[in-house]
Amino acid sequence: MSEDRLSRVFAALADPTRRDIVARLSVGDATVGQLAAPYDVSIQAVSKHLKVLEDAGLVSRSHDAQRRPRHLEADVFDLMTAWIERYRRQAEERYRRLDAVLAAMDDRPKIHHQKGATS
Amino acid sequence: MSTNATHESTTQQTRIEADPNVPTIRIIRDFDAPPDKVFRAWIDPELVAQWLGPKSTEMRIDEWDARTGGNYRYAAVQDGAEVATFYGSFHEVRPDERLVQTFTWEGMPDGVSLDTMVFEDLGDGRTRTVGLSVLDSFEARDGMMASGMDVGVYEGYEKLDALLADG
Image (cartoon, rainbow over all chains, first blue to last red):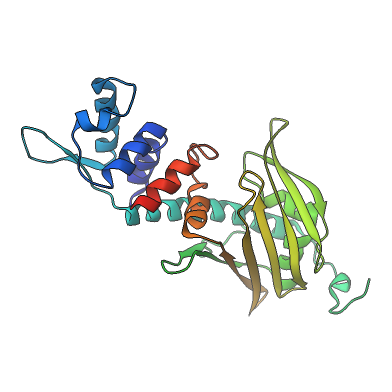
């Protein structure tokens, strides 16, 4: 997944309502009306959320002209890939700080590392 | 990515493996320092505080007894406010070779991971660290992964878990 795509996916999933929509679409396709039903928001608001999800490539419209049900494009495996990549980047950032710490450390003798030391 | 930091080698990249069959996370990374030095950076609280916490937060170490059977507790502090606290025990501290800890985020007190870090001597003053975190469920593992998001880190946890579990 490209950097840009990943950023859009994360931005899209930053909103709890959109995460909920994704969770519900993972069970099966649904129309805007069906998706809006459980929320105390307008169809327009849900449409806006869907637009963000569509722009991120997470959701698509099927060609059924009448109902235009929404379909989840990304499967959970894709999302896991995204989580892992983000997690990896955070670990890499952390380890780069450790690189700097190691570079700044003196090479002091390992007296405190004697195996089986009782002190 | 890093062009002007001379101590960094661009060949060093963190690798992550999330096993599809067991709830574990493996993190592998090489360092341009011998094992005793890398190990020291992992157990000396003054050194740990310089790198372990997230970039935007300060790591305040409240307890740190890095001996086999010892314990630790630290907080992530942002603008003077505690954002999160973590604690666990040092199950085994085997100098320069192996560090085994338990790890709990207080926000999810029933969750605990068992973290084993192995320090492999690559020769030429280099070390490979292989970290293995074992969690008690896929939900906990995936939640831990998802917590790396820069948005909604502490909220929406349950929803993400549900999302990943529903798949």
